[in-house]
Length: 406
Image (cartoon, rainbow, N blue to C red; front, side, top):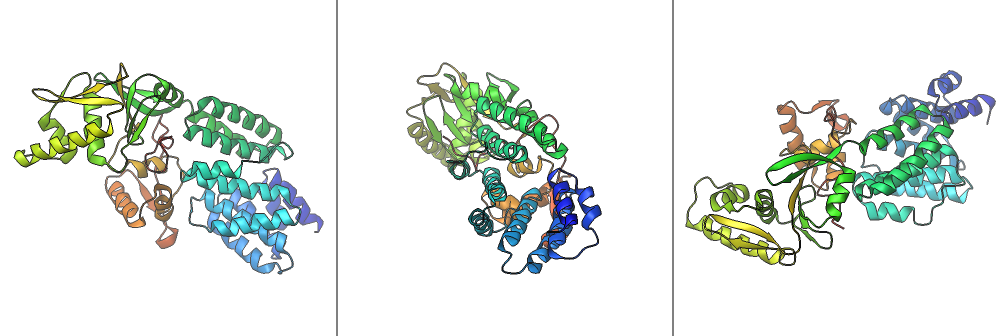
């Protein structure tokens, strides 16, 4: 490797993409193309970066398997940064294996971090934790240690373990300072601010207020009966009853929870659960059936008693009932929650993250665009959607579909 390539690689490792480009901007050999691609990615020019890296992969010979594997890892990092979650995970895993086999533990570890970050982003926390089951970040340089701790903190946040998240972020901050890379320090600062902004709303006894993630953790560990409208379930500190696949039952549970300790009139329940404007005997009969189903599902947590006006939630162990709701509720709130991170998303990436069809996501995006809540740029497969972050809120930690109820 010649001196210009070495100097450019060192500049990129130090977070200086312009310094790297000064050395290799006019070269078209495979190593220079790869470094130019990484530099363009650090500058935010993802489309140009991907093109350069693919040209570099074609330029390396079959014997240069390590160089090709490094390019694949860089391409995966660009895909993650540009929220393209459809890139082939098998290719990244094969590249990681190649790097480990040929004695490049640093880039192999980086590949592992990228896969874990992708899994966290789409809510597969168990799989992300398995990647780090036997991982020790101590031997690695500060930048990689910071990246590892950021993933650990992300998992802890979504598990609602704020103490572990703060500890991981503190370690990430120390490593980022040691690495002296401004972009990495900014990423750690952004992750730390997430813990200080509201992640949900508490609705109880006719009042509501925002909750930080730490306060959500306290609520879920308390003796209160919580109707969790973020992840669609009813729970106390010992038992969880998921209702994700039972939207009618959850709508009834939420209406009863919001009204507690009062009862809810039957016509209100019919409107909340079925959207019924005109009530007849068939609606009343269906309400009785669904209330009976909900009563059976919640029998370990609460009873539902009939009153003269309607129905009332009666907790068995709890002395309080609270509803935990998303900070901003919208018909397409889950899509908005992902777009609120300020990154540009493709509809295919949103479909992967939400576990739904791309057509469903596209309909939601069209509705949000018509309402002026999101905007797009680019065309066809390069089309991306973006919206400014919701001021003062972090909406991505307590999403219903991707997260488990454990």
